[in-house]
Length: 562
Figure 1 (cartoon, rainbow, N blue to C red):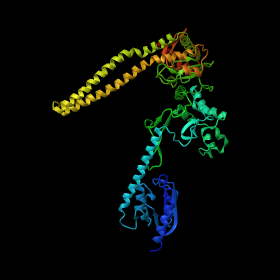
Figure 2: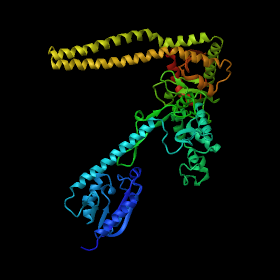
Figure 3: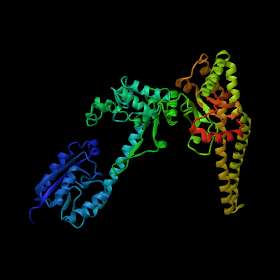
Figure 4: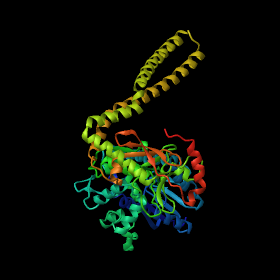
């Protein structure tokens, strides 16, 4: 036999490092070199992959070794053991049983006493499975450790979210970053006022406010050298980044972790369903109040759009069609360009709804008058305002209170009876008084009824609890309204603070006048009555609406506003 050209392959993973084997590469080199010398192998190259998992076969020096094998430069490959070659038993088996023999390359795993020159290598298959089991078990332990740390509320990300920095004495805890926190607060305030994420991004670009990635790069937390080769990229904000900030409960002081997890052996990550993510409340100081957070997210979801003049209405995200529930969109009507709101369903040229047209001035005046009335009432007679809110909400929900209470009592009584029937059926079955077929049929019937009753009980209890909350909500509403007793104008800010929803109903119209109704759902107060007013009438609509106006008027003649 001639001189065998030999490759020594060494590998060390991060998991091996954690176990204190920091000299493993050095040890492997010394051991394999001595073995080659003792057995007369001529070492032509030593290949080393330091810090690479055995489950990953895309390793630089491993690939370089395969290239040399393909070029016919290597006759023998030697590793310390099979796990150094890899820990995926299928791929290791492919190399030891198929690839190396096809290339006439002899493979030796010293500690495992595996040598493909020998016929008896059955132990290799078992060793490969055990090596993969080790990696799988290790992966499971790491994942368990990560989830345990997450449940303890420890911040685990390698970089800081904008608005926060890691505490100097504890890198698992976030503290407020005085430099970037005002940026986050402004994003939420703008969104709360009805400004969309696209417009916020545009505003920040114009004002040259540095984006989150620049802060990370400038502080040495992440390397974005290529991105910031152009200085102007420092101010490029993405609407997606802003949208993600607005949705992130991190800014309420809560941590949501384990959003992704690694897929074993694949080397990629997958998203974890929201129900399986770990949320820990009050882990750090909040930047945003819950009310601002909820309002901002509600506005973002409402998909407000600018009008043709580039303005966003103060009613954006609040005004809805009283019939179909869809948003009302702003339009300009007639040669004088009167500002109106029209049902978006009707605006899409469908026959599913009517236009529900309302003029901006009519809506503005009606809403302002309603707020002024209730704010003055709350300021001058708080008890009367609370009583009104309770009465109106009781009218909507509470009238069902007695009925719900009776239904709940009946449902619980029937549920107890079904449970007793279960017990009796088992006794009858054991005593032989009932056949197996009848037993199975009745068990299935009663079990289905029991599940339905339990759902009904939960729903009724939830509804009754909401009715009980009316009193405390009414007090909050009166306290809030009393602060606006002297209100003289409507703004995006006060509208979003006081109102959750405005419903516009279709107008009833004659030649002389038109009457229209709006319902206002107040924050905490709910629907406190309705406001009926004389709507504006124009006899000369613009051409765009002329063809549909006759049809609308015909429809409105048979509509009544309830």
